[in-house]
Image (cartoon, rainbow, N blue to C red):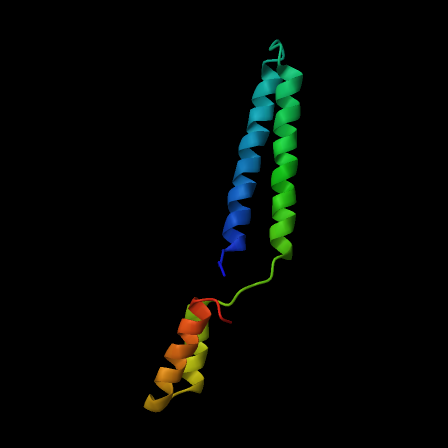
Length: 98
């Protein structure tokens, strides 16, 4: 199992979209370029791809933050005997068994 921070990935994609929109503005300033239409289409296609990725990321399931999980376990399991159980659960989650 691989955990990702979807919000951070969405933020990166949104920054890429902003950069591409700036490229489009620059292309319109140089309309004499013989590849003007092709460049605009290419950039628009990239923007659409990034937006599709953002939509996909919004549908992914949320994984639990291991540090939050450990904090919750430590609240529940306060005695010394329970610490090995909490460590085992932490290890299982980290290795993707849960």
